[in-house]
Length: 312
Image (tube, rainbow, N blue to C red; front, side):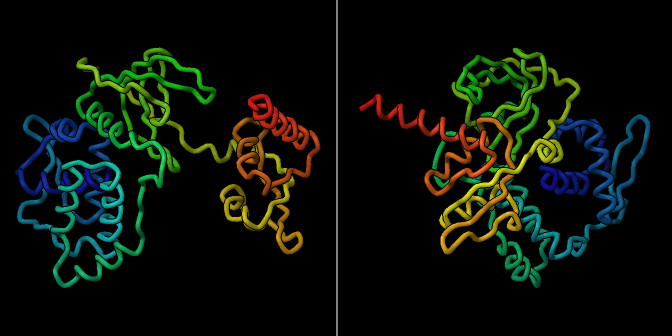
């Protein structure tokens, strides 16, 4: 995590006279380009970092400079503590505990109460209410593989339930929405892939290490593409489903229809994912138009009913 790394780099620079860029990159297991970006961010925060080129060169904090605890504002420290605390609940590790301790050391005693109050104004809990409890152990294994540059092997199930055996070089853990993914280079596909951790089984860390290749970050924002693909459909929902519907559309798309129902212009793409959203509302949702989507919903409902009838 960047904030954790920035704080740790500051501590290293305070502790040593001079540190080479490659030494920092190896220490934090990131690229040289990332280290240079981090040093620039530290400088923008008001900490004077000098660089020396050539043999024996590297980065150092200007001689005689001491980090003023006031360099971080109340808002800065509150935001850092909030982020670290939310992650430490899901990804436990000595480095996160250490980072929290380091950040707390920057808090002047006379501002501790104010900062604690602000940091607790928003509580982020990434752990699920229920569901797959093996995610945390998988995260721990993947982080170990990331830190040690070791291959991961696992069985992966796609969205249709088809399974394949995979071996991948892990490069990044990704939290997107409420789901965890690992982004890595897949040997089966000979390309980078984003694997949803809940679809992985039989996860194992190989003793074999890999040499990191040129890394390409995953594309995570498809909002513009999806917006172009969306076509609104009209549905009628019961009031009990309104809160859930607002997860998929804006409030201006919802209008009252009598005392207990609402009409909704819902962004929709004709695929299983969106049909399953409609089905998840059960009898609290009726698709009104267009007709071909209404008829497809009717077919799917009948197929479900037939499954239960045949079982009986």
